[in-house]
Image (cartoon, rainbow, N blue to C red; front, side, top):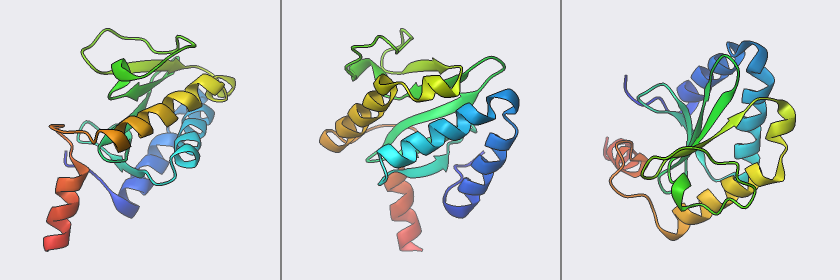
Length: 142
C-alpha cells in the first residue's frame, strides 16, 4: 500500500478512528493532542496502514488494538522520559500503551510529543523508509 496523504489521508484516518470501537475516544484524543501540540506536523497514513505524523521526518503514529492504543515514537529511544511512559527495546522505536482518555491527558505524553518534534527540528530524520520530503519533491516536479 502506498502512503496516503492530504484530504484522502485525513478521510482514511477519520474512518480508522470511527472503527476503533471502545477505543474511539482514545484515538480521537491522541490525534487531537498531536495536532494541537505540533500544529505544523503533517498527518498521513504510512505504507503499513498506521496513522502517522511528520515534521522533518516521521515523528509518531498510533495503532488501535483490542485493549489499548499503541502510540509509537519512531525515535523514542532518544527521548527523555522522566515519567517512564515509554516501552520497548528496539534500536530506536518506543511506544506508550494508552488505555483511556485520561491517559491521553497525562502531561508526560504531551512532553514526549514536544521532545520528539524538537528532535526532528534539530536533527531531521534521515534514511527512513517513509520520507515525506522526497514525496513532496516528487509532487512538486509533477
